[in-house]
Image (cartoon, rainbow, N blue to C red; front, top):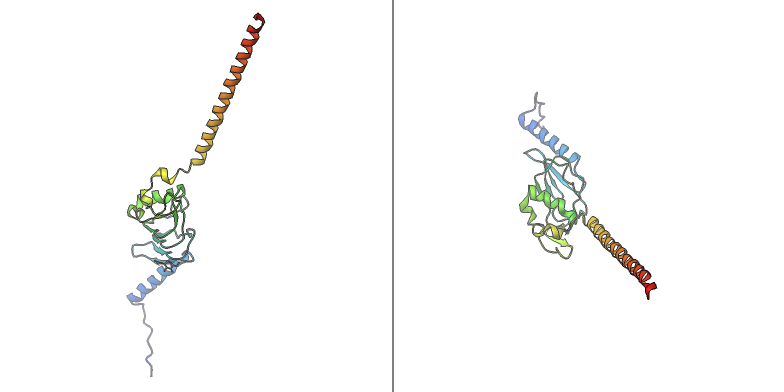
Length: 189
Ligand SMILES: *[C@@H]1O[C@H](CO)[C@@H](O)[C@H](O)[C@H]1NC(C)=O
């Protein structure tokens, strides 16, 4: 005859531990992005592994994300403020992505400078040609480009028009002056 286990009057400790772990895993996966794996960390917060998923955009990340893996995807840019709602985020791995290193990557660069400077050296830019193959940490602010560039060019072209307008006024003035001189000196000849 098989043994029939008697129901124990109270859960032994390992059972409570297993229940807690189960709850933590369920909690962890509630807000987990579709193509990522989330696991609870002993130190609270979540480890979120989205590596090698062919992601072309950042997924919506759970608010308790502490360690985030985005390596080996097809990410080109990070929208400004992308990690602002993740106060617990501590480590970020983003190597092996075709990063487009222009001004749109300034937010990522500043975030890494503040939180994980060593990661900054591991990020290789795929484009634009000026930055291809170079680590993000080596690019100057000038090379990344200024996001206010549009404003600057429009001001610059406005400056050119202003110069042209001034020159036109000056020439007109000169023509008038010459005309006036001819008119006033003309009758004497
Ligand atoms: C990168 O991810 C692809 C799937 O997108 C996988 O096939 C490949 O093995 C991964 N490469 C590395 C180096 O992890």
